[in-house]
Amino acid sequence: MSITVPRQPAAADVDARRDALDGVRDMLPVIAAYAPLGLVVGGHVAASDNPVGAWLGTWVIYGGAAQLAVLDVLAHEPGWVAAAVVGVLVNLRLAAYATAMVPDWQHASLRRRVAAAVILTDAPWALARARTRGRQTYYLGASVALLVIWPALVTAGMFVGDVVDGIALTSLLMPLTLGAVIVPQLRQRAAAVAMAMAVLCALLTLHLSAGLALALIGLAGGLAGMAWERVS
Image (tube, rainbow, N blue to C red; front, side, top):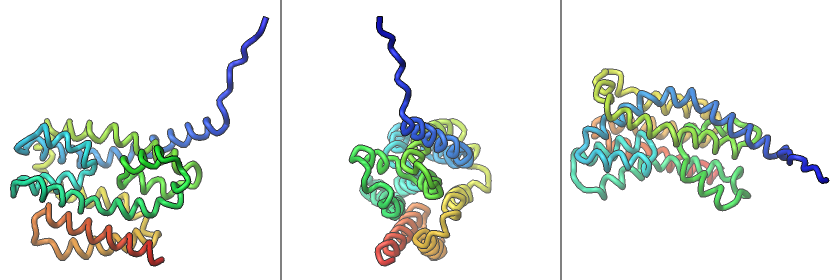
């Protein structure tokens, strides 16, 4: 008669699970701060000429600032090419984030690196930069939590976003949210350079439409951050 002993999980598996749960736990307060922005994005989605298409863009664009910029361009001038270019330029800062992540991810499997790239955005990147142990799994846990909840916030905003958008302080939500995520990273030289260039560009583009201004800000900040990483 043989006795089967249950296989105990390896210590590495336990640590990885703990790191992922830490990422989810740390992301929840950030998601709470993102909630008003998500509702505002949802309001703009509902007000667009094609709400279903705009809602599906939540999964493709995956960024509140970029999605607002794209919707703004589509509202003022028809043509998906211009909107797509603006969305890419606003999200160009993600290239600077990816460059900063290279040392931690260069030996990861291809599948893991692709997953990390697809769900890359500001908050998980910033949280993971401050992590000293299990950074990859922590980042993935935080990113998946945001990936699940962000579309739900946008969807809810399609029903109540017009109320939130009517509040005068709503225009400050996006810079305040991004600032809360990025400012703690300013001790990193590349992030500081990117932020400084973005602020300068924001001041110079106050007279432009929101979509074009966000595109130029993303382009300037992203290029400055990447350039600093390469020369430093």
